[in-house]
Length: 271
Image (cartoon, rainbow, N blue to C red):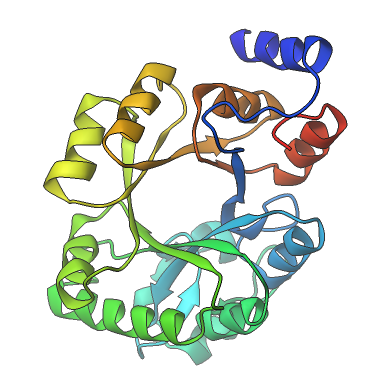
């Protein structure tokens, strides 16, 4: 109810440019743009066509060491194969599996090909390094090395590429192996004293992704004082995005980027 009040307030009573924290809220298309499909090339293509500025995606590694795009380890939700995990099949075996949505799995190389030459893109590469039993430390380090090399060697000059994770292992390893790399800590908590402290003081990571629910404007302001960029996730409605803007977040990862962008444009919000 509160979010609907925020949306109505902005739509009816505010006009002109709105940038609550000094910077406009940057929309991030969850899984490339779930209004089209989850982590499929067609979603990224449509998001780019519609002018969405940011993208989030999920990177996993097959049994034979190929980096591919998919959120889950288990293949039940996408392929109906709960008995299989990406980490236990080869790329050839993965590509032979029929997806429920009729689309194809995508390799990281294919996604990087798509972004090559595109100006000013912001991309979050979420490092999927769990479950631990399938991705022990040595396997995780191999994954990080391959991911960093592939992404940084193909990054457009003005791109803003960020490596993110809720697993502290790849965050710590990347810091040690590749000093200065941009990273984001993903927490299941809202922006709060604890999540800010872990991100800024324990992990020494410059960006925090936290749950929208429970996040306050005061907490976001404190995160900014600590030098953090803030992403609040995962938006499911226009109301969520308006609330994210009100809170002063820098980024908002949303399942409905096209609907949000259309609403913002029509109401001169966040432009």
